[in-house]
Image (cartoon, rainbow, N blue to C red):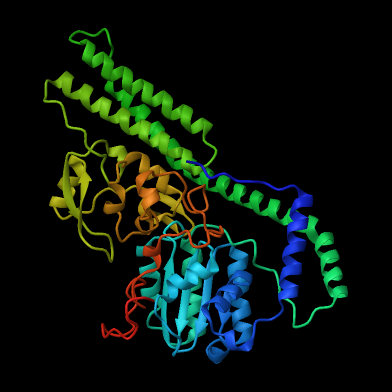
Length: 452
């Protein structure tokens, strides 16, 4: 189901901005007694991505907090960072803060010298959150820890920053002159805001095109390789011994080849690539059936393609494999790679171009999710890729159910930055402080109970 997006006319947008500004100005500053309440923290985070509690100001200077906030805003990601004092109440803190803020995103909290994070699964999978938190857990300096976490999070997370960032609240009492002046400034700047929104959309569209261009090189190689397989087959429907079943297999393989070329020509975003690789996989299985019929062998069962390179064709068995730093698992492999692994040699891995040079496709970034999903459908791929970059990104429930429905910055799967209020999955923000984010904040001693 596609989300319904309502667009406003420019006058309507300007009016909404004016009313919002008048509301903020008339509200004034919150009372000092509420300085550390969850609602106060949430109100601050709706206006800026970084909040430092006055009682924790020694941990992160105003200049460092401002620099961190600017980095997050510049990346256009829904990352929220709060620095709180060590004695801050932790019961259900993440869930309550997410409810009060009401914005889909990634929430990171430094509490004294402890750190943890939670996220809506549509923005960043729980496994990815755990890995990011663990990677900075040993850093005692708040600036270093938050900077490193922010850098890793912005690289991996999806979604866009909320539109509320950048607004500012007024001081204490506000005169009608100030209200009128603020309204006039907003009306005058409304056209500029509208222009910025359109510019952001254009930028994301350009990112989509750039990702598709990089992905197109890999897909074209796959299509070419399949075409070469068809040529090497040297099958003629009228040849001696050919029967209707063989001709049907061959026709399905030819149809898959033409479909793959057609789907790729019509692709406008990386998600569209899933249909291409799915067609290629269907075609390769048809060729496997045809080959078995021609050679008088039993027909092969339908299996996923070789994990290491889908161009190797359908797998024939499962073999043990462990990515660097990951846990061992069984992956589907072709006969040649099964032999290599049995002999203690490395399999022939599909590598693609990245900014860091040639890398295996599972370490090449989010655009390859739809590409891999077309080959490994049915919920298989996340289990195969646990512990890899791509596997962490693909661990969201919505993406596991339908690869290519939205991935990172490349489509409509992420709703980060959207205002959802209290309508979110509490499981994404549950657990004790450190239980869900991957940290160790009490050695199992229960210092934070069951609800950060």
